[in-house]
Length: 282
Image (cartoon, rainbow, N blue to C red; front, side, top):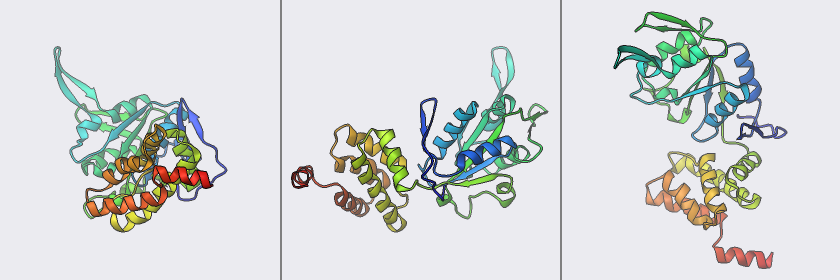
């Protein structure tokens, strides 16, 4: 979140590592306690999905994750009638299963979904906590433990996409950002197996490119990209080659922008021969 607290320790649930950056764990637990839906906004790869996975394990809940897109229909989310060997039958969608089972339903990048999706969410996101199934005539009351969580990247918002105020005001909202450098270094270390020094260099590089991204890149390098890069470096690949493969190439197709990224990379990771010389004279 926006105000990191460095006194918090990383937590591991069921083998899943998560390093809290603020009061997000406590806030999520309180929202769950009162049956409140949660909205998480933040840039790509900053840990939104990992946080939800961590909280599902922490609370002992089953998690249904839906990646939203333009072609996602209400039927995809709620369910539909299908034809089988015994005739027509109803099959629940992920949202309906979560409502019946008291599970968590996570809609990732919800603003990418069609507008009619929000019509389904409204009665679940207020005190009613109901899901009307028009196709079957049922009106499901959410089972205890059900939780609706949605996320989106504010950087993708435009005039045609975005949540209406009437929708946003139904949620407890959390604003995520890339972790503070010391926290992100620990995350990169743990997830990639990279040594502390190179993990620090990698995070410093990521922050430098994020400043560059405000002007020349459509998307800043995410913590996820830093972890991917760290894994290649930890496996023995030259850091500059790893950075080109995991940062310069994925972030842009423009040769000029790629060259600018590699200039920043070279400032953080010297030639292998130069690195050895630096160690001799250190």
